[in-house]
Length: 429
Image 1 (spheres, rainbow, N blue to C red):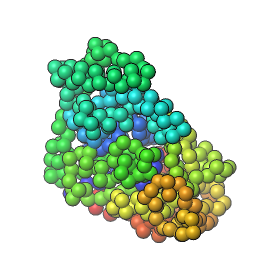
Image 2: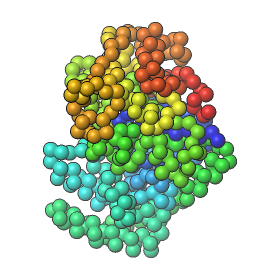
Image 3: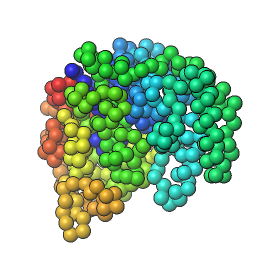
Image 4: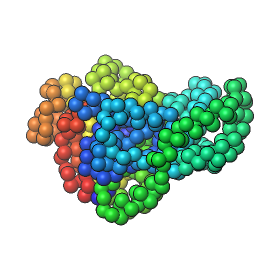
């Protein structure tokens, strides 16, 4: 049962896309299981840069089936633009399939997302305003329209009339203009005609692939601490980026997932609001931002940057039952003479080694740091651990010791080749 889930071990943006691309070369099926086009994966191959928001990054391998699963919410316009853009760069892609149970993102979702965020005033969450939260709200409220309904004209017409009447009342309450049915129906019917051949029952596709012993890779988006239940609520996303989400969003049972890799940066970043104990507001933080080009794939927003937080990392290892870690962006730390990492927190008079479950308490913690020597050499030509400076190897050992989880892969640059596989036995089992 060669199955593998890849999850973000921090607050997202950990370079999961590169890892899905690298390991997707060995996979038969790559399944994206959560989120929408509020999350982005960037993959660099040679002189080409691919930016994915909905399509699984594994589609770059022609023999692979890439699946947008039932746990996702799909903006059809964005999906088609992304597919056309990717095909223009690389015509020979894998096969794309879309779950008939994935929910559709409509313009009223985006409008309500922006209106609700504005209404929060100083308490903004930092949403991308792509309509993802409102689309998931509709899913929970049993108001959502699914891809399987979108592609059947008579069903879609009935459902859209029903839902739009309700949504227009909400838009009017917010002081916005209502949407007109005919133009919205015509627009999305056009998208449906292009996507219809790709829509199918992906749960049975995934289940049969696992039963047949095919290599199945489950691609997570965003990060563990943006999870709706396990994250720093309310500064979270609307879905489940944790490893358990790979079951919830695909129709695969938990015992069918053999290995789980957690992707983490050699430092920490976060986008939007929410507590961030190791955040840096100095020249080092800005240096990391510029050296790592820490700007969002989807929004272009600058990411908040800080030292590695091993308290967060330990919690992520527990939540996801990680088989191993993929440590990325190690090269970004080159040239910093002294590195620091949080190994515990103080909360009032207490010293604790775990994340408080209450976000308001987490916002009050102060990091307890340990210092480590840095290195000056560039790492990007390294192809084995022995090629790394001694201090870089010490840093990796420190991460393993603090997280109590072995490192399976080290990424020392954005290109496919800038990857060191340390423990291949932890990948596909």
